[in-house]
Amino acid sequence: MKRVIWIIPAILLLSFTARAQETPSWEISGGYSYLEANLNGSHFHLNGGSGSVTQNVNSWFGGRVEFSGVQGNEAITASGQTTVYSVNAQTITYGPVFSYRRFSRITPYGHVQIGAVHGSAQYLGISQSAFKFAVAPGAGLDFALNRSTAIRVDGEYLLTRFLSLTQQNASVSVGIVFRFGKR
Image (cartoon, rainbow, N blue to C red; front, side, top):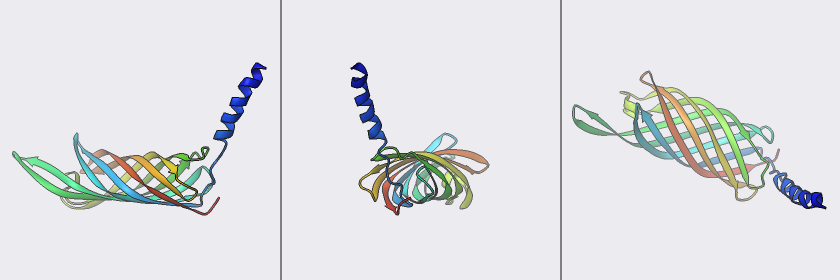
């Protein structure tokens, strides 16, 4: 009798987690993006937007292209004078995304993306705008609103290299996801 008492909750728990989501063929997302840029211990904050397009090959693997554009102010102090510059940066990256679609309303995922970052003059202290290599591993959660719409929360570690120095930046984005097709 004791076994039956433990088996019933176990079956209910397993059946809850086994309710996998339908896998969409495509996901298109867009929303707000925040970047904390880091230059040798000096931090400044940039705000803007981001978007991505994901093609899911199967229920757990896909490819994602992601782009973002952020802007803000950077204060540089030299010879006792502080000058404030308006700066902006854009990224475009591509890479694999790994999703875990075992829950009915939440989809956790991880990704590693490689691409380019474009910084305007004075971004991280550069004298003229430039394109540089970028790597952006990250993870996030999609919270399903219905079959075709979700809210996405994403965090990334954005590694860049300007002025022969490595910058370790943090990026967070929140937005909406539209899902199309079925796998």
